[in-house]
Length: 57
Length: 124
Image (cartoon, rainbow over all chains, first blue to last red; front, side, top):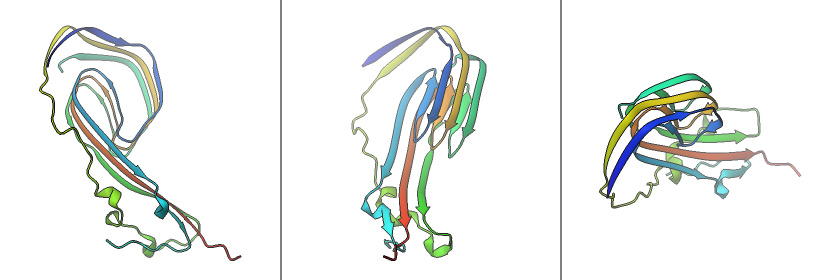
């Protein structure tokens, strides 16, 4: 696949962002390759009543 | 790549946990972030409450990417090399994130976060 990019200038006015988090990108400009990954889990083991019993590997 | 960034005003409140704010060009950006967010009821804190990353499988799991990367040929023609930015106000940039004005060639960001809530036993 061939891509021809003709840039005739790029101008951005006002931007207001609350938060950019967990592998996110705010980009004004060029890019070639983006690979973003985010792991997030809250299984039952994450809610513990009483003392913590660590699961040894 | 190779463009000129003109930025008149930018306000960022906080940049944390392997994140960047960059005006100009970046070639490679490979941040990693691993965390265990523990919320525990009780006022005693000592070592036996320490948790290690290898206790949980989330920190070893592999990300699944596309196996065949498509052959892409890109050629750029920058007739007007200017990037003009007005004003930007950002409250927070965190956990392997990036705010970039200009070129950013390759990004490979990874975040792994484990939340744990620990409640004391109720004597009923």
